Length: 173
Image 1: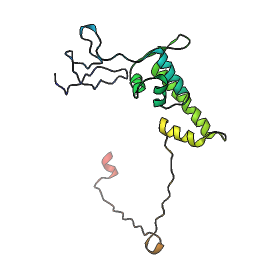
Image 2: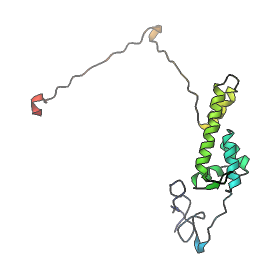
Image 3: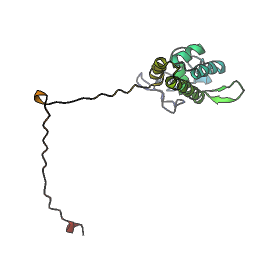
Image 4: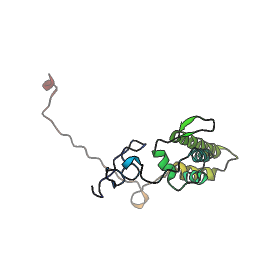
């Protein structure tokens, strides 16, 4: 085994793990289970942290804001979304974290869209949050006028070349 080999274990999102295969079983520290023990640090994923991150997303917070609300480090939510984590909801049901988080983000996004449309809403803040947290881009219309020499029209010429072929309709019969 060398340092260029990758783990290759299938992650929760169905893609192969790209971490280095540093253990004797050819896997990374996350996926290796030598002697039945899982290597690597334990996950910070808990039902309570999942619920806090989801509630923050529902309130329209950025992913970084959701991480702060759940008391977890930067990038952790993205890691959780790649895994197949489930959590217990407030009413005791088992739910997929990635599905619940996506639904909550959609609710937060809708809140900003509604705010942007409302006469009483803060349209500047709604635009900022939609662009910075949800990937929206403001479209800009640009018109360009071209003029020729001395401000006159531009002269355009077309050349058409006709090529004769030996083919005729009789050849198809």
